[in-house]
Amino acid sequence: MTNVHQCERGYAMELMFKLPVLLVLGFIVFSLGQGMYYLAKDDGDEDKTRVVRALTVRIVLSLTLFGLLMLGYVLGILQPHSV
Image (cartoon, rainbow, N blue to C red; front, side, top):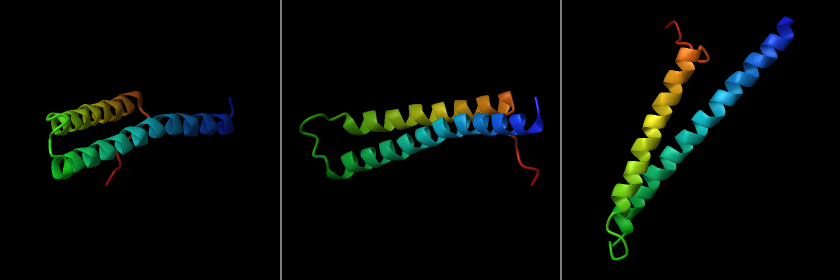
């Protein structure tokens, strides 16, 4: 395998890893906004647990993101910077 193919394969792996991370991060922000909306505007007539449910979803998504980042580190896709 040539260096060009290895570079293309490495870029594809990074993209395959970064896309789910960005999607989970977007869902976390959406869930946070949803919880804030329910907290500020909802009067609680329909369902009194919507705030708790929205924030629970955010916590689960945050743990999923943490797991994805740890998996990327273990697999060598993510490497720490030498700052």
